[in-house]
Image (cartoon, rainbow, N blue to C red; front, side):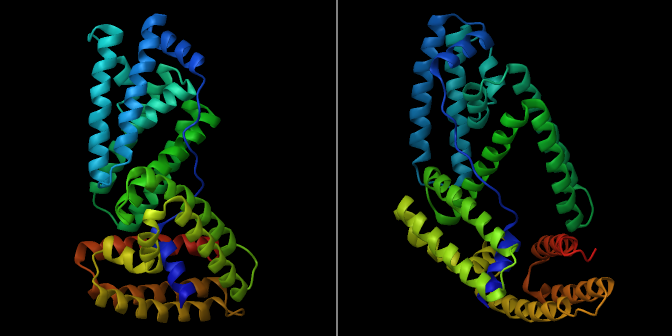
Length: 350
């Protein structure tokens, strides 16, 4: 039962990877970069270091506030906009906003620019590529079409964007940026999930990232089911201890959410109440048993396995359909079908 619940929780959450933190910086090199990029003299570059210190101080204070992720994004944008005006006044007497254009008044752009010393032209190219991608993605989601196809298209679009990012920034900087951005958004999710400040959510996200990858490695290993279950339990316990040490104030909430991870996902993401969640899990457990039987029929051709599993999945979706509101069901069912096809490909059945 625990294995089934954990697997479905991972299925609904999505894929995971590794995390990275903001890199250190050589102050002298940053000064040279600022002078070269913004055509300013040494004195103004020194003044910028003082401005940056104040920005980082206020940003750190913001990251320590226990607010929603939506409010955090709004407040951080306001903060960078405020300092954009200060920088413009310092560099160009308020006539130009090149710093704001380069950083897009976002921390990850500012860090990429001033810690990785990415040229202004590349920063603009990155912004244009990401902006075009967002417009295309939003249009795709608004267009008519099956939800599972949109999930699939989103994956393809993201892969294409990441390739373009690495072409613009180079492999090293591109890889860092992609992973840091992903971790940033994961931290935003954790802010709301665990009701913590951004700095704590970021720490939790890093730890979760590491251990989720370890769990994936265990799932993909050749261990027997019983051995795999023991290994997963050990990993979960180790992760809980790490979080308790790193963010003690969030430990209880983290345990509460993750001890009932599937319940949390079905409630927060799809709007099911506890009675509906219980009915969903009963239906899924029945599905999982039948799925196991089909997959372990050694004499059954792969094409027949796929057909039977596909029919089994369709029946499961019909069973749980009444538990969801119409829009939520469309969203969940789209994800289910999308993930089913991915799983069939991984197992070599399609």
